[in-house]
Image 1 (tube, rainbow, N blue to C red):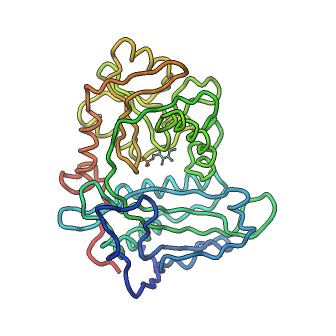
Image 2 (cartoon, rainbow, N blue to C red):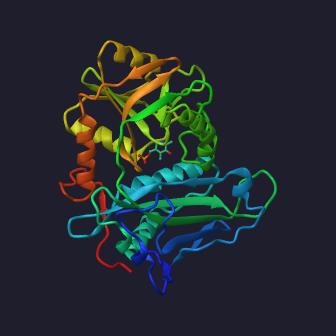
Image 3 (cartoon, helix red, strand yellow):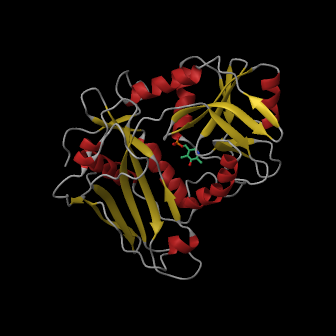
Length: 355
Ligand SMILES: *Cc1c(COP(=O)(O)O)cnc(C)c1O
Protein backbone atom coordinates (compact mmCIF):
# COMPACT_ATOMS: atom_id res chain seq x y z
CA UNK A 1 0.00 0.00 0.00
CA UNK A 2 1.30 3.44 -0.91
CA UNK A 3 0.95 5.81 2.01
CA UNK A 4 0.29 9.44 1.43
CA UNK A 5 3.21 11.16 3.11
CA UNK A 6 3.12 14.94 2.75
CA UNK A 7 6.50 16.58 2.28
CA UNK A 8 7.70 20.06 3.17
CA UNK A 9 11.31 20.61 2.16
CA UNK A 10 13.89 23.12 3.36
CA UNK A 11 14.76 25.93 0.97
CA UNK A 12 18.47 25.28 1.32
CA UNK A 13 20.22 22.08 2.40
CA UNK A 14 22.86 22.25 5.15
CA UNK A 15 24.72 19.28 3.68
CA UNK A 16 27.33 21.52 2.05
CA UNK A 17 28.57 22.56 5.52
CA UNK A 18 29.37 18.96 6.49
CA UNK A 19 32.88 17.53 6.22
CA UNK A 20 32.23 13.81 5.65
CA UNK A 21 35.82 13.05 6.66
CA UNK A 22 35.25 14.50 10.07
CA UNK A 23 31.68 14.05 11.31
CA UNK A 24 31.12 14.87 15.00
CA UNK A 25 29.46 11.84 16.60
CA UNK A 26 25.70 12.12 17.10
CA UNK A 27 25.35 15.88 16.80
CA UNK A 28 24.87 16.35 13.06
CA UNK A 29 21.34 15.92 11.77
CA UNK A 30 20.02 15.98 8.22
CA UNK A 31 17.63 18.63 6.88
CA UNK A 32 14.39 16.73 7.44
CA UNK A 33 12.55 14.35 9.77
CA UNK A 34 9.57 12.04 9.38
CA UNK A 35 6.72 12.53 11.87
CA UNK A 36 3.40 10.82 12.51
CA UNK A 37 0.86 11.43 15.32
CA UNK A 38 -1.29 8.94 17.19
CA UNK A 39 -4.67 10.35 18.23
CA UNK A 40 -7.94 8.60 19.06
CA UNK A 41 -6.58 5.17 18.23
CA UNK A 42 -5.13 5.93 14.79
CA UNK A 43 -1.80 6.99 13.33
CA UNK A 44 -2.44 10.06 11.23
CA UNK A 45 -0.81 12.82 9.23
CA UNK A 46 2.46 11.10 8.22
CA UNK A 47 4.74 13.85 6.99
CA UNK A 48 8.30 14.82 6.28
CA UNK A 49 9.21 18.30 7.40
CA UNK A 50 12.31 20.37 8.16
CA UNK A 51 14.25 19.11 11.20
CA UNK A 52 13.41 21.33 14.14
CA UNK A 53 12.18 21.65 17.70
CA UNK A 54 8.91 20.02 18.79
CA UNK A 55 6.79 21.88 21.35
CA UNK A 56 6.31 19.59 24.36
CA UNK A 57 3.90 20.03 27.27
CA UNK A 58 5.68 19.69 30.65
CA UNK A 59 3.17 16.95 31.54
CA UNK A 60 4.01 14.89 28.43
CA UNK A 61 3.76 11.38 29.80
CA UNK A 62 7.04 10.12 28.30
CA UNK A 63 8.88 12.58 30.57
CA UNK A 64 7.25 11.19 33.72
CA UNK A 65 6.37 7.56 33.11
CA UNK A 66 8.90 6.63 30.46
CA UNK A 67 6.76 5.39 27.58
CA UNK A 68 9.57 5.87 25.06
CA UNK A 69 11.17 3.35 22.70
CA UNK A 70 13.59 3.58 19.81
CA UNK A 71 15.32 1.78 16.95
CA UNK A 72 18.74 2.16 15.34
CA UNK A 73 19.69 1.29 11.77
CA UNK A 74 21.83 2.50 8.88
CA UNK A 75 21.41 3.49 5.24
CA UNK A 76 24.36 2.78 2.95
CA UNK A 77 25.02 3.23 -0.77
CA UNK A 78 25.96 0.65 -3.38
CA UNK A 79 28.73 1.13 -5.95
CA UNK A 80 26.36 3.16 -8.19
CA UNK A 81 25.41 5.47 -5.31
CA UNK A 82 21.93 3.99 -4.80
CA UNK A 83 20.80 4.14 -1.16
CA UNK A 84 19.91 0.89 0.61
CA UNK A 85 18.51 -0.13 3.98
CA UNK A 86 19.52 -3.25 5.91
CA UNK A 87 16.68 -5.54 7.08
CA UNK A 88 14.30 -2.63 7.74
CA UNK A 89 11.42 -5.08 8.26
CA UNK A 90 13.21 -6.47 11.33
CA UNK A 91 13.48 -2.99 12.88
CA UNK A 92 9.76 -2.44 12.21
CA UNK A 93 8.93 -5.74 13.92
CA UNK A 94 11.18 -5.01 16.89
CA UNK A 95 9.74 -1.51 17.36
CA UNK A 96 6.32 -3.09 17.66
CA UNK A 97 7.61 -5.74 20.06
CA UNK A 98 9.00 -2.93 22.25
CA UNK A 99 5.77 -0.94 21.87
CA UNK A 100 3.70 -3.88 23.04
CA UNK A 101 5.87 -4.45 26.13
CA UNK A 102 5.64 -0.77 27.08
CA UNK A 103 1.87 -0.46 26.57
CA UNK A 104 2.22 1.62 23.42
CA UNK A 105 0.35 1.31 20.10
CA UNK A 106 1.95 -0.60 17.24
CA UNK A 107 3.07 1.36 14.22
CA UNK A 108 2.10 0.08 10.72
CA UNK A 109 5.17 -1.82 9.49
CA UNK A 110 4.67 -0.83 5.85
CA UNK A 111 4.46 2.86 6.83
CA UNK A 112 7.63 2.45 8.96
CA UNK A 113 9.54 1.18 5.90
CA UNK A 114 7.91 3.67 3.51
CA UNK A 115 8.75 6.59 5.84
CA UNK A 116 12.35 5.42 6.03
CA UNK A 117 12.58 5.04 2.26
CA UNK A 118 11.16 8.47 1.51
CA UNK A 119 13.28 10.19 4.16
CA UNK A 120 16.47 8.48 2.96
CA UNK A 121 15.57 9.22 -0.66
CA UNK A 122 15.20 12.90 0.20
CA UNK A 123 18.44 12.91 2.23
CA UNK A 124 20.48 10.79 -0.21
CA UNK A 125 23.20 13.47 -0.41
CA UNK A 126 23.73 13.03 3.34
CA UNK A 127 24.89 9.42 3.05
CA UNK A 128 28.67 9.72 3.38
CA UNK A 129 30.25 8.23 0.23
CA UNK A 130 33.15 6.89 2.31
CA UNK A 131 33.87 3.24 3.08
CA UNK A 132 32.56 2.31 6.52
CA UNK A 133 30.47 5.48 6.81
CA UNK A 134 26.67 5.45 6.74
CA UNK A 135 23.57 7.47 7.44
CA UNK A 136 22.42 6.46 10.93
CA UNK A 137 18.64 6.35 11.26
CA UNK A 138 16.84 6.74 14.55
CA UNK A 139 13.12 5.84 14.50
CA UNK A 140 11.47 6.37 17.89
CA UNK A 141 8.09 6.64 19.59
CA UNK A 142 7.07 8.45 22.77
CA UNK A 143 3.97 9.44 24.74
CA UNK A 144 3.28 13.15 24.22
CA UNK A 145 -0.08 13.31 25.98
CA UNK A 146 -0.23 15.88 28.80
CA UNK A 147 -1.60 13.89 31.73
CA UNK A 148 -0.63 13.25 35.33
CA UNK A 149 -1.59 9.75 36.38
CA UNK A 150 -0.52 6.18 35.81
CA UNK A 151 -2.04 4.66 32.72
CA UNK A 152 -1.10 4.17 29.09
CA UNK A 153 -1.04 7.42 27.16
CA UNK A 154 -3.48 7.96 24.29
CA UNK A 155 -1.37 10.39 22.25
CA UNK A 156 2.02 9.43 20.83
CA UNK A 157 4.51 10.65 18.28
CA UNK A 158 6.55 8.47 15.95
CA UNK A 159 9.58 10.23 14.46
CA UNK A 160 12.54 9.24 12.29
CA UNK A 161 15.71 11.32 12.46
CA UNK A 162 18.83 10.81 10.36
CA UNK A 163 22.43 11.55 11.27
CA UNK A 164 25.54 10.92 9.14
CA UNK A 165 28.11 8.71 10.90
CA UNK A 166 31.78 8.25 10.09
CA UNK A 167 33.58 4.91 10.02
CA UNK A 168 34.09 3.25 13.38
CA UNK A 169 37.76 2.56 14.02
CA UNK A 170 37.55 -0.62 16.01
CA UNK A 171 40.13 -1.11 18.66
CA UNK A 172 39.86 -4.15 20.88
CA UNK A 173 37.70 -3.29 23.89
CA UNK A 174 38.05 -4.06 27.58
CA UNK A 175 34.97 -5.12 29.52
CA UNK A 176 33.99 -4.90 33.15
CA UNK A 177 31.79 -7.85 34.18
CA UNK A 178 29.31 -6.07 36.42
CA UNK A 179 28.50 -7.95 39.62
CA UNK A 180 26.49 -5.36 41.54
CA UNK A 181 24.23 -3.51 39.10
CA UNK A 182 22.02 -5.29 36.57
CA UNK A 183 20.57 -4.32 33.20
CA UNK A 184 17.65 -6.70 32.94
CA UNK A 185 15.84 -9.39 34.87
CA UNK A 186 13.53 -12.12 33.67
CA UNK A 187 10.10 -10.59 33.15
CA UNK A 188 11.51 -7.05 32.96
CA UNK A 189 12.02 -4.80 29.94
CA UNK A 190 15.44 -6.03 28.77
CA UNK A 191 14.16 -7.38 25.47
CA UNK A 192 12.52 -4.04 24.60
CA UNK A 193 14.55 -1.18 23.14
CA UNK A 194 13.03 1.04 25.83
CA UNK A 195 14.61 4.37 26.78
CA UNK A 196 14.58 3.59 30.51
CA UNK A 197 16.92 0.61 30.07
CA UNK A 198 19.64 2.99 28.93
CA UNK A 199 19.11 5.46 31.78
CA UNK A 200 19.65 2.59 34.24
CA UNK A 201 22.90 1.63 32.48
CA UNK A 202 24.50 5.08 32.51
CA UNK A 203 25.91 5.15 36.05
CA UNK A 204 27.32 1.59 36.03
CA UNK A 205 28.95 2.37 32.66
CA UNK A 206 30.54 5.51 34.12
CA UNK A 207 31.92 3.46 37.03
CA UNK A 208 33.37 0.89 34.60
CA UNK A 209 34.97 3.66 32.53
CA UNK A 210 36.48 5.24 35.66
CA UNK A 211 38.14 1.87 36.32
CA UNK A 212 39.66 1.92 32.83
CA UNK A 213 37.15 -0.27 30.93
CA UNK A 214 35.29 0.56 27.73
CA UNK A 215 31.97 -1.14 28.41
CA UNK A 216 29.98 -3.09 30.95
CA UNK A 217 29.47 -6.83 30.46
CA UNK A 218 25.99 -7.42 31.87
CA UNK A 219 25.34 -10.54 33.92
CA UNK A 220 22.06 -12.09 35.04
CA UNK A 221 20.12 -10.48 37.87
CA UNK A 222 19.99 -13.51 40.19
CA UNK A 223 23.43 -15.13 40.26
CA UNK A 224 25.61 -12.58 38.45
CA UNK A 225 26.97 -15.56 36.55
CA UNK A 226 25.14 -15.89 33.23
CA UNK A 227 26.34 -13.56 30.47
CA UNK A 228 23.70 -11.31 28.87
CA UNK A 229 25.28 -8.69 26.59
CA UNK A 230 27.78 -5.87 26.43
CA UNK A 231 26.84 -2.18 26.48
CA UNK A 232 24.48 -1.91 23.51
CA UNK A 233 25.83 -4.98 21.75
CA UNK A 234 25.17 -8.70 21.81
CA UNK A 235 28.13 -10.96 22.48
CA UNK A 236 29.72 -13.99 20.81
CA UNK A 237 32.55 -16.30 21.92
CA UNK A 238 34.56 -18.82 19.94
CA UNK A 239 35.58 -21.75 22.12
CA UNK A 240 37.41 -24.72 20.64
CA UNK A 241 36.46 -23.84 17.07
CA UNK A 242 32.74 -23.36 17.79
CA UNK A 243 30.73 -20.19 18.32
CA UNK A 244 28.38 -19.64 21.24
CA UNK A 245 26.13 -16.69 22.07
CA UNK A 246 23.67 -16.20 24.95
CA UNK A 247 20.23 -17.51 24.04
CA UNK A 248 17.26 -15.16 24.03
CA UNK A 249 15.60 -15.58 27.41
CA UNK A 250 13.63 -12.33 27.57
CA UNK A 251 16.45 -10.35 29.17
CA UNK A 252 18.68 -9.67 26.15
CA UNK A 253 17.97 -7.43 23.20
CA UNK A 254 17.21 -9.37 20.03
CA UNK A 255 19.94 -7.76 17.92
CA UNK A 256 19.53 -7.68 14.15
CA UNK A 257 23.32 -7.79 13.79
CA UNK A 258 23.27 -10.81 16.14
CA UNK A 259 20.79 -12.73 14.01
CA UNK A 260 22.67 -11.78 10.82
CA UNK A 261 26.06 -12.82 12.26
CA UNK A 262 24.58 -16.21 13.23
CA UNK A 263 23.39 -16.68 9.62
CA UNK A 264 26.76 -15.61 8.13
CA UNK A 265 28.76 -17.85 10.50
CA UNK A 266 26.59 -20.87 9.71
CA UNK A 267 26.85 -20.08 6.00
CA UNK A 268 30.64 -20.08 6.35
CA UNK A 269 30.38 -23.54 7.87
CA UNK A 270 30.82 -22.69 11.55
CA UNK A 271 28.86 -24.26 14.33
CA UNK A 272 26.84 -21.65 16.32
CA UNK A 273 24.91 -22.51 19.47
CA UNK A 274 22.55 -20.18 21.32
CA UNK A 275 22.53 -21.23 24.97
CA UNK A 276 23.05 -20.05 28.55
CA UNK A 277 26.75 -19.14 29.03
CA UNK A 278 28.36 -18.52 32.41
CA UNK A 279 31.22 -16.10 32.95
CA UNK A 280 32.98 -18.90 34.85
CA UNK A 281 33.06 -21.18 31.79
CA UNK A 282 34.53 -18.35 29.70
CA UNK A 283 37.23 -17.86 32.35
CA UNK A 284 37.95 -21.61 32.33
CA UNK A 285 38.19 -21.58 28.52
CA UNK A 286 40.62 -18.67 28.71
CA UNK A 287 42.76 -20.51 31.28
CA UNK A 288 42.92 -23.75 29.30
CA UNK A 289 43.62 -21.92 26.03
CA UNK A 290 40.36 -22.77 24.20
CA UNK A 291 38.90 -19.25 24.24
CA UNK A 292 39.82 -18.22 20.69
CA UNK A 293 37.72 -15.15 20.11
CA UNK A 294 35.14 -12.82 21.68
CA UNK A 295 33.27 -9.94 20.06
CA UNK A 296 30.25 -7.71 20.44
CA UNK A 297 27.74 -7.11 17.63
CA UNK A 298 25.50 -4.09 16.98
CA UNK A 299 24.39 -1.65 14.30
CA UNK A 300 26.57 1.21 15.52
CA UNK A 301 29.93 -0.60 15.34
CA UNK A 302 29.28 -3.80 13.43
CA UNK A 303 31.69 -6.10 15.24
CA UNK A 304 33.78 -4.95 18.21
CA UNK A 305 36.64 -7.21 19.26
CA UNK A 306 37.09 -7.92 22.95
CA UNK A 307 40.57 -7.96 24.43
CA UNK A 308 39.88 -8.74 28.06
CA UNK A 309 37.13 -9.03 30.63
CA UNK A 310 37.58 -8.08 34.28
CA UNK A 311 35.77 -10.49 36.59
CA UNK A 312 36.28 -9.32 40.14
CA UNK A 313 40.02 -9.53 40.81
CA UNK A 314 40.55 -11.87 37.85
CA UNK A 315 41.16 -10.89 34.25
CA UNK A 316 39.94 -13.06 31.41
CA UNK A 317 42.36 -12.65 28.51
CA UNK A 318 41.00 -13.23 25.02
CA UNK A 319 43.34 -14.52 22.32
CA UNK A 320 43.51 -12.59 19.05
CA UNK A 321 44.72 -15.45 16.90
CA UNK A 322 41.46 -16.36 15.21
CA UNK A 323 39.87 -13.36 13.53
CA UNK A 324 36.75 -15.06 12.12
CA UNK A 325 34.75 -12.11 13.45
CA UNK A 326 36.71 -9.76 11.19
CA UNK A 327 35.85 -11.94 8.21
CA UNK A 328 32.18 -11.80 9.20
CA UNK A 329 32.39 -8.02 9.58
CA UNK A 330 33.85 -7.76 6.07
CA UNK A 331 31.06 -9.95 4.69
CA UNK A 332 28.43 -7.85 6.46
CA UNK A 333 29.93 -4.61 5.11
CA UNK A 334 30.26 -6.04 1.61
CA UNK A 335 26.57 -7.00 1.63
CA UNK A 336 25.62 -3.54 2.93
CA UNK A 337 27.54 -1.80 0.12
CA UNK A 338 26.50 -4.17 -2.66
CA UNK A 339 30.05 -5.43 -3.18
CA UNK A 340 28.95 -9.05 -2.91
CA UNK A 341 25.71 -10.76 -3.76
CA UNK A 342 22.96 -10.29 -1.17
CA UNK A 343 22.23 -14.01 -0.99
CA UNK A 344 20.17 -13.69 2.18
CA UNK A 345 17.87 -11.08 0.62
CA UNK A 346 18.52 -8.53 3.38
CA UNK A 347 18.95 -5.28 1.47
CA UNK A 348 16.06 -2.92 0.73
CA UNK A 349 16.93 -0.82 -2.31
CA UNK A 350 15.65 2.71 -2.63
CA UNK A 351 14.90 3.39 -6.26
CA UNK A 352 15.79 6.68 -7.84
CA UNK A 353 13.85 9.67 -6.61
CA UNK A 354 10.73 8.34 -4.96
CA UNK A 355 9.82 11.80 -3.83
C1 LIG B 1 20.29 -2.04 19.89
C2 LIG B 1 20.93 -2.96 20.87
C3 LIG B 1 21.70 -4.09 20.48
C4 LIG B 1 22.09 -4.38 19.07
O1 LIG B 1 21.01 -4.53 18.20
P1 LIG B 1 21.26 -4.35 16.64
O2 LIG B 1 19.90 -4.56 16.06
O3 LIG B 1 22.23 -5.37 16.22
O4 LIG B 1 21.80 -2.97 16.43
C5 LIG B 1 22.14 -4.94 21.48
N1 LIG B 1 21.91 -4.69 22.78
C6 LIG B 1 21.23 -3.61 23.18
C7 LIG B 1 20.99 -3.40 24.64
C8 LIG B 1 20.72 -2.70 22.24
O5 LIG B 1 20.06 -1.62 22.64
